[in-house]
Image 1: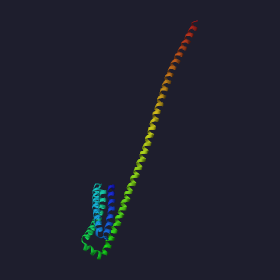
Image 2: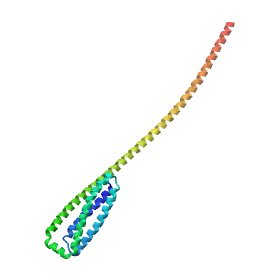
Image 3: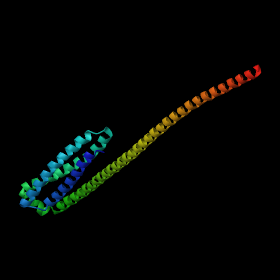
Image 4: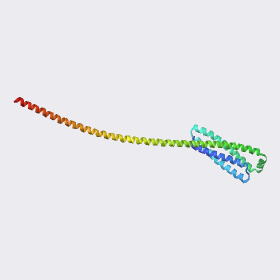
Length: 221
């Protein structure tokens, strides 16, 4: 679900709850106090309408599956908004017509109690939606924190692996240096052995020639 939509939804639920309480309060007020409360309700309805438009735009920008779910929720909020709007119109009409208001005060106490119960039920429903929206936002934040911690852990592991590779690379270079030195030593030893073989071969050849020379002189004499 879109986090932007959830933020708009959270704000709308808060505003709807406030408007419901304003409507309930306006039914028991009169005079300037009631006018001021109706003015606050109208201003809140304008803000609520703007939030619903933003929620509609955000929902339609998502994938088809997510869009269908969010548009279904949006229809419920629009129904709630229309109910608040009708309640505002009723209050405005009652305030504009003083005689009708007096008649309602005299003979409509039962209706006022009925409206109050209806508003209370809507307020409870809106409060429940607000709590659900708050829980979803908290869950989204918790998921973001867990993802961030996982990313940090992965980066730390990658850093450790990089250090291990660098250490292994240095070790390999050290082994290459040792192998090069060993190769040079073996080459030097091989050359010395070849030189010694030549020297020994020359000495043996000289000795053989000397023996032959001695035997030759002995045979002659």
